[in-house]
Length: 185
Image 1 (cartoon, rainbow, N blue to C red):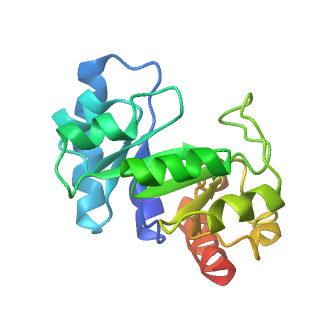
Image 2: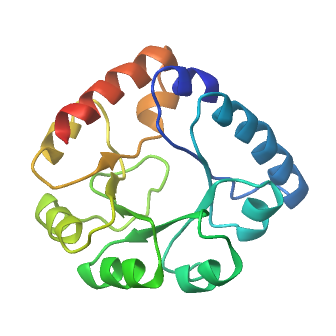
C-alpha cells in the first residue's frame, strides 16, 4: 500500500503505530524506510524518538504532549527532520523557535484516524501558516472533495491517510491528490 502511494506521488511518508510492540515497530520502520528511499521520499516516525533513531528514519513528528522539539534537536543531527503539530499561532511560533523543520496544522476537518482531534477553521489555519517561515502542512480529514476549501490558507501541502489508503485504487488516489495539492499551493 505504501509503495503504491509513493508511486502515485506521495512526497513524504509518516509511520504512525500506537499499539505495536517497540521491536516490531522498529522492524516495520526499517522496511518502510527502504521502500521510501527507493522513491527518494523521507520517512517520518510519529511520536517515538527511540524508533526513529533505531530505524535510522529521516525524522520524527511530535504533538504538543510528546517530547519537545528542543529536546529532540539536542540529540539528533541537523539533517534529522522534526515536525510539530500546531493548533495555535503560539504553538507554531514556539515550534519554529525550538528548531522544527515543518508544522502539521489542524485538524481542519473531522478525521477518521483521530476522532477526538481538536478542530481549527480555515481562518485559524491561515493565521498559523502565516505566523511562521517554515512549511506548514494542513492535517486532519482532508480528502479530494474538501481540499479546495484550503486554497487560500497559505499552506505548504496537505497530509492525508484515509484519502489514499481507504481507496481501492491507492495509486490513482495518490496521483489525484498530488495534483490537487499542487493546485492549492
